[in-house]
Length: 140
Image (cartoon, rainbow, N blue to C red; front, side):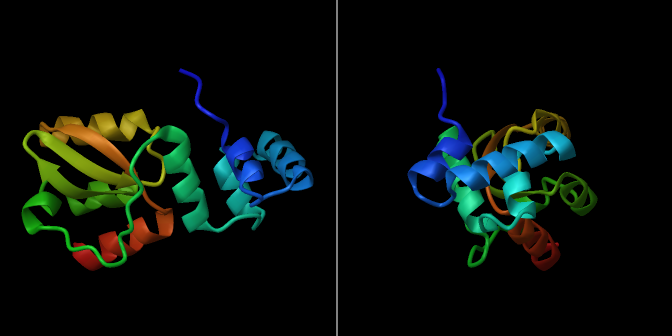
């Protein structure tokens, strides 16, 4: 299944224009970063907007970590150092599935590490990187 490109979704929503898209694509080639990270670095979009559109593009849930309470039994599944290193925080658990907020939900290496340590299947959720860092600081 072909998923829509992030740039096309942002263009369609009038959040960036054609010129910004071209600039971001050129800058992406130069920096070697992901398109969304490039848009953030160029200050073309806000982090919350990127997370919402990334979730839409990938058909994944987007989670706000601002007013959420995470049970200690869920947090205890992922050690603090691992959460910091991977920039990922467990949000909830359902049977043998652990829902994890990540700024890059396509980071399969991080998901594999979490699955190996927890023994649970990881279901990624999109969240802005800064809110993940804040949540790790707040909860651990």
